[in-house]
Image (cartoon, rainbow, N blue to C red; front, side, top):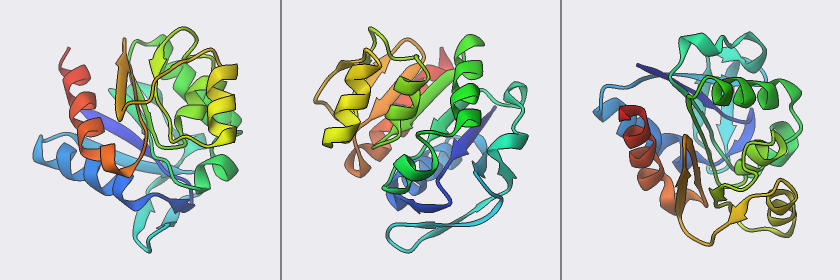
Amino acid sequence: MKLLLVVAPERYRDEELEEPVRVFEESGVDYDIASTASGTCTGMLGGTAEATLTIDCVDPDAYAGIVVVGGIGSPEYLWDNDRLISLVQEFSAQGKVVAAICLSPVVLARAGLLAGRRATVYRSVESVREMEKGGANLLDIPVAADMQYVTANGPAAAAEFADVILSKLAC
């Protein structure tokens, strides 16, 4: 089983990648990291991650699910990325796990996946507006799961977010 983890090339939230990676590795779940460009991506707190492929080169058939990491780079690099929006729609159409944390649940809302679904997001004026515009049933809780969709509101929820993703993969 393999997951696709998507990060912004700059200013992704370190813990929102590192904690799920730790949980996935401990559970034997393999993963690839993708971004808008391949190579070294930098986190808000100074961490780095190697994106081995670009979003444009992803084959959804190779993965059991997609996890979109948050951080302040998400609005700039991910929210309006047409290929990423198309990817999450493809994963959804195949019934696969579609997950996002922090500011990145907005990608799912913009893709039309959260209409009528329970979801959470890191609350900013813009993120709340986008989630509501996408029809999400926005909850003020750390992690929300509805069908194959998993959302979380920030770094403090990263481990629980990863655990819920694993539970959805087991279904």
